[in-house]
Length: 181
Ligand code: HEM
Image (cartoon, rainbow, N blue to C red):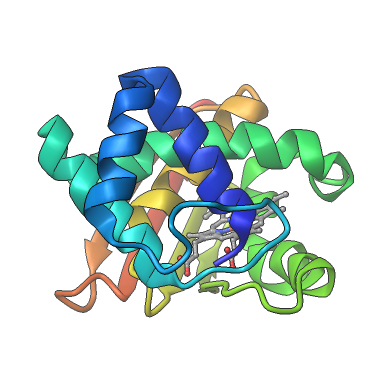
């Protein structure tokens, strides 16, 4: 997992919970990196899992809720860092249906070692999109947060529901329906 995902995560934890929480979760997580992340480095995904687990235990919030909030913050980081990737879209459903064949393809060119999920388009109409998320990292709540922010970015509203196709969350079906054209 790319370092920027860790550095932004720890910044958000500091903002929301304070520096002491950052120190606590780093200490409890027994990290090979010892929590010394650089944005351009690459680190084991298991470090993110440990940080999330310890933040969840110390804050009382579920890992899914933490990932959702984190994704909403991360969308802003992506939009600022890669404006050209988003600029070519005028419609949130077009953007979301292009993660697989455009957005993440470009991301993989920038970071050849990025570990990305797949988002297969199962159905697409003017107002509806059905996506199948697949990833061994089971970060579907992170995807949900990014989808919500995508609609905000385009000043559009949608009803987004999901159904786990596998109980561990490595395969999830998202149904996204625009609610105001
Ligand atoms: C992960 C880039 C849009 C879903 C990532 C990562 C990057 C990235 C750098 C981390 C990879 C790693 O650490 O190895 C981008 C950029 C985007 C974008 C530049 C737009 C300009 C989206 C959108 C979604 C999405 C709109 C919405 C569904 C995900 C998910 C992950 C991820 C769920 C977590 C990894 C996993 O589940 O396996 N993306 N992304 N991304 N992205 Fe995107």
